[in-house]
View 1 (cartoon, rainbow, N blue to C red):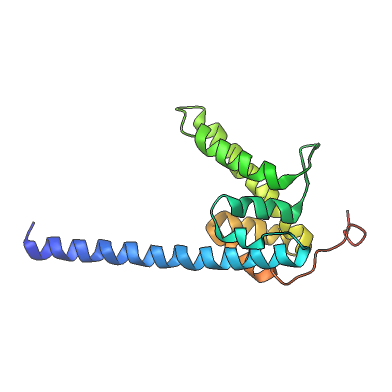
View 2 (view 1 turned 135 degrees about the horizontal axis):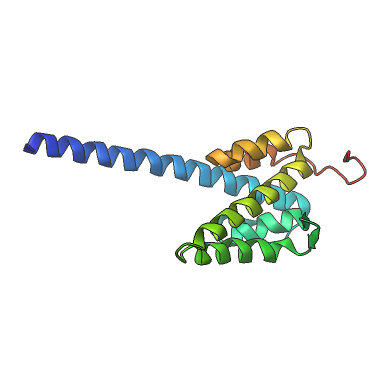
Length: 157
């Protein structure tokens, strides 16, 4: 390979890393603003924790509060969400069975996302959840940040 070819490959690599870093930062800011606004609107103390990784899971879980997981009610989701997500990330490193934990974490997150979107926009919850699989969760949290939670009496079962 020539020196010019090597330099072109390095420039391309740096450009690609810069592009994905910018995308990551934009999504991070949108998610943090969305969660912080939702938490502040619900009266959750220390809503600024939405800017700190891992504690943003606490804030997201606190916004929803509780959810039903296959017939089991999880109260205090502010503590459960970080524990489940971090625990599954650690357990996902185990060869072979790690894939099961990865799938379990993804399923748990999708259930959480659906319940959160259903709380703020019942008519769009399924669409937002499906599109969240493609990394758009932060955008939808930002979009819904100023919506008022739908009360249980308004939910159609």
